[in-house]
Image (tube, rainbow, N blue to C red; front, side, top):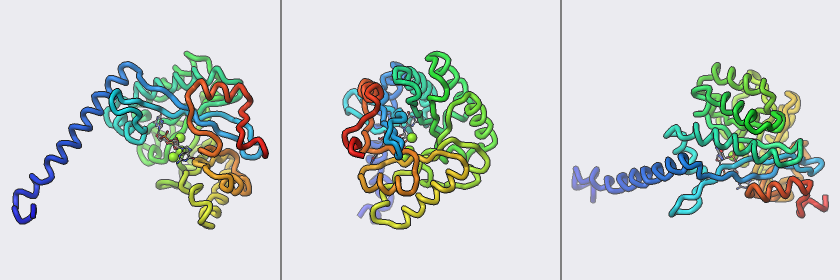
Length: 282
Ligand code: C2E
Ligand code: MG
Ligand code: MG
Ligand code: MG
């Protein structure tokens, strides 16, 4: 009907577009306030060694609670932080906070921090990481930085140079969500990573799909031949863990082993030696 009315077609969609923009502006305003007040928290998801079932460390995950709407998923607000540039101050806060909280865990239990491609744009990331390590005194070997393939698609020379400088600080570099995007083997060839994190999609497919198992097995083989550690994310079922163990995957993370948890709980887990009930039998 809208089409038959000619000009009415555009008008038909306008209220919807306005509503989307208004909602976005409201969210952006609330995010700006949160950034100014550093009104975020970090949750920590445990990572275990598959073979020994020992706790190795935690991944820091950003959490934000909107004053009226309640908790908002990072999948929804991280892109907005990136578009507005707020990811620079917030990302620096994440680094400082993760390093400070990790300092309370027994050495060598480590912390992994996700970095946005936007943080690399002005090489600010190098000073943010240095500052976080200097201010807190966390040993660099206890910090891992997770980057995504998206980063490597842009400004490659500059990015590789910055990554090399970061690695020279003594921190680990992990390639996150490996296999989910435009994974190019050339990245593995051109930069010396410390770790590959296999994307959740492959782990999810493990049960029903023989191809997923074959792909994971070859990623593990490739990674090991390049001297990389392999982590699987999104492990939700015992049979997935068993399959990962079977192909020699080094580390695992997922709801089966532990959900992201507040700092106090992570500290208790770290100090308790990382025993988890569901793993006790192994
Ligand atoms: P990611 O780095 O791949 O983090 C893993 C995500 O998978 C987390 O979602 C985690 O809660 C979820 N997850 C872990 N185990 C399982 C599982 O067994 N099943 C399922 N279904 N999900 C699982 P979360 O916390 O919502 O974070 C989503 C994404 O937001 C992260 O993906 C990361 O890309 C981004 N992000 C989170 N915190 C930060 C941050 O501090 N800085 C930046 N730049 N990005 C962040
Ligand atoms: Mg990650
Ligand atoms: Mg990931
Ligand atoms: Mg992921």
